[in-house]
Length: 353
Image (cartoon, rainbow, N blue to C red; front, side):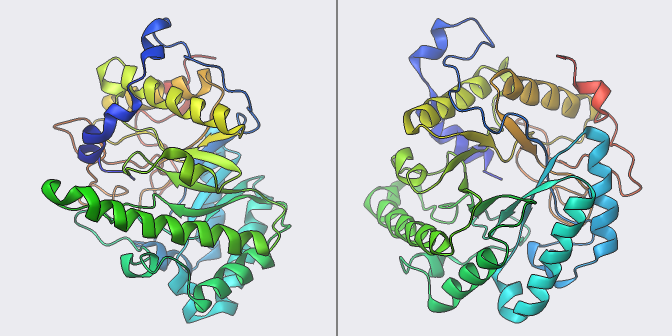
């Protein structure tokens, strides 16, 4: 989940003249490859997990089964699930058996899973589980990390419930520095991390998965956008911001990624969206605007995040900063008893069809 404050600093990269020449709300350019427009679902962190490491370390098939089922009240057909290299490193057999069961449950509930193999997003207050900056700054994966990728992807490389492999959630998140030091120093850090993910993509491809690979990207980096998108089969975007100002900046972000996808001749999917709020009314507005604009552009979506639980943004006392200025972000859709959070019922926000 990208930082709202950092996004506002870099939002000029999404200011495109073409957006002003079309009627408000209409796409500036039509998405050419709409392969994933049918995808509708959520990011999923099981309600018992405070970190992505706990999701697998404390794997509870009964909870996953029940909570997968809760997603179907919104007609979900996919979930995006993050995992942690440390879980594999501790007990590879248990890690793989847990994923085998998770994919079995996905089939039971008619869900596809986007599997995110690493995370670089870091919350300002609450540890969530991420690959360390020192690891990616080596510029290439270690032999142990290569074993993780080849074993994990190789085991499920033809599994019909795997939608795609997401190499990392929001790379480059940990390479922030003081404004006055951003220049060459920050550029060098990001260059090394880019080298790491390029090498990771080659390792994953060596496992010969039948599913495509992607990277969950946000705006919070200074690289040429084509560099990260060159290494993937599917472009994943995380549009969150701008729904509160008449939605124009949200539209601009979506249209920016459509242009990138068309230039790359690749499909596009939104793998995170829907900012947070403690207000049911505000959150309902967020959902209506965000998902409405995405569906208008034929972009499939995976909203943040399905379950109330222990993780940041899934509970009222651990809020995120991904919200309208002056608000605080509570971002879950379903209470632990399976009932939709107020304002989140599908009939309350699906007003466009």
